[in-house]
Image (cartoon, rainbow, N blue to C red; front, side, top):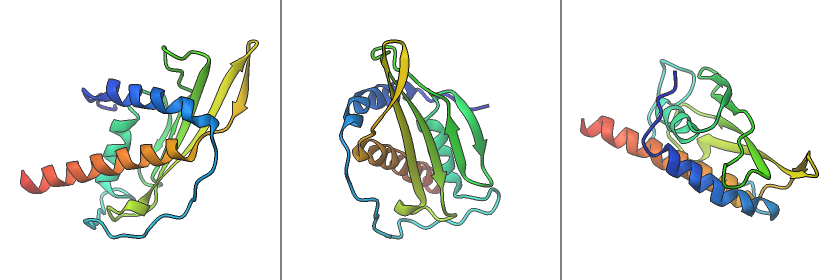
Length: 149
């Protein structure tokens, strides 16, 4: 069972705000390889802080698949009630056991409703980058809490 954090609504609203940005394209896929508070995790296949942060961030969306050993989370289509004419589906991949900026990737699919048909639409690179930043920030906060506690 996925715990629903109190800020799931705000994350949902942020995603809703980012959805309109999906019409723009571009952006580099290269990421810096900075080692940020490396923390090995062996109980699951990927970094537990990144895994938990990703689940918390996407908790407002229906989940299709969660694989903690492979580090993959796949959501079902989500349409914000304030923007029912478009929907998004996300795949989050945790790529490492270390808590690193380049250890999380978000891929997004976006569709818009045209005359009752869902048509694929582009997703702006800033949308996925922002979600990666949110997940990374939450993971760092979780790690800080674990160390302080």
